[in-house]
Amino acid sequence: MRLLLIEDDPMVGRAMQAGLLAAGFALDWVRDGRAGELALANAEHDLVLLDLGLPVKDGMALLRAVRASADRVAKHVPVIIVSARDTLAERIGGLDAGADDYLLKPFDLDELIARVHALLRRAAGSASGETRCGGLLLDARRRMVSLDGEPVTLTAREFALLEALMRRPGAVISRQRLEDTVYAWGQEVASNVVEVHLYHLRQKLGATRIVNVRGAGYRMADC
Image 1 (tube, helix red, strand yellow):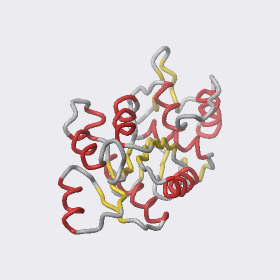
Image 2 (image 1 turned 30 degrees about the vertical axis):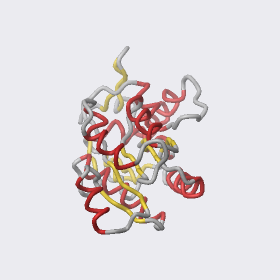
Image 3 (image 1 turned 120 degrees about the vertical axis):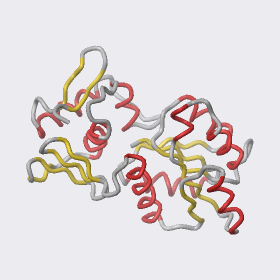
Image 4 (image 1 turned 180 degrees about the vertical axis):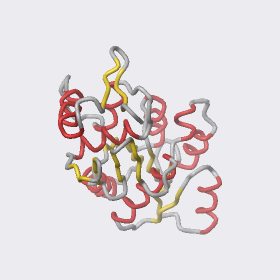
């Protein structure tokens, strides 16, 4: 899953970046509201972590602009406000403006990661975090995969690719979108990296489980 962090405090941002990367997420980090607006307009993210006290454009103004956007993807992206603004009126205002959750600073990284997982499960329509495709079961909450009841060990990026495919059963997902799912801006990406990860997934799950739709992308079979 690819997240967007909009946070101007370098110490807070680095801590969030380290924790989320260690949890297996791809993360893009921008440091002002205008940069956040541009990021949402030019890339697809699965969830946004938004500070309110941002330079250039305030986080609340950014949130309202996103929710009023004509861009369907940006308009509906899940947003967690992460802010030190702790009055009841500010928390209600953030939720009324379109945030899906509100986390007060300072916070525990484990709580942040749990809230991210919970909101992604809700967005995917799975309260348990489990997604099935034939005999294949992916548990996003516990970061586990099993095939016909037997556990399958995946790397973080293999898991992210499989989750992206299984969240949209039957849909063809482009190579670029899959690449964007597992790599953040600035990370060096080899030209065939998605194909390499998919090759290893097929070795572990079966050669016919992930279908290459020539010229279009990839989809899960038998979902």
